[in-house]
Image (cartoon, rainbow, N blue to C red; front, side, top):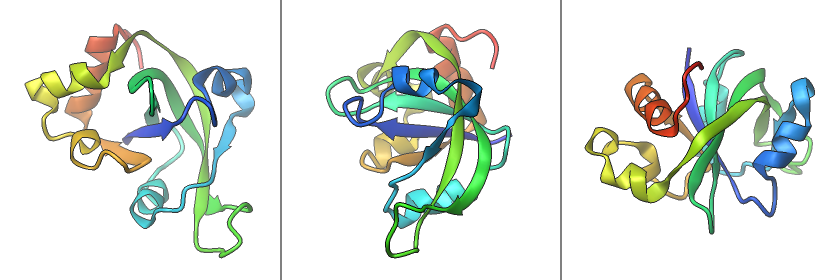
Length: 140
């Protein structure tokens, strides 16, 4: 299983909106960065991801599951980029802030800290486990 981090500005697409989509999920579209697109191309159904509120909040608030693999993004007029579909799995009981992530030496190599502007990022299995511990996530 692969692990990922999906960043979204809560004013554009929030965790509450994602949860409201239920099992139908939602296309993760609008990504226009080649590295983020390559990350999405690597995703498989069943992979898990953290839902991260960027901008003002800067914190992990939920967990999603990839329910649809990479396909063309109909919102991309250039036809260069694609999307995946994700479904909300559950809240992170205690949201994990960027400050807490930066303060944890076990997370020093995280893509979030090295490539802060990248909207879709890989997360290692060790990082996933540590972030789940920090957020009070028991089952993933």
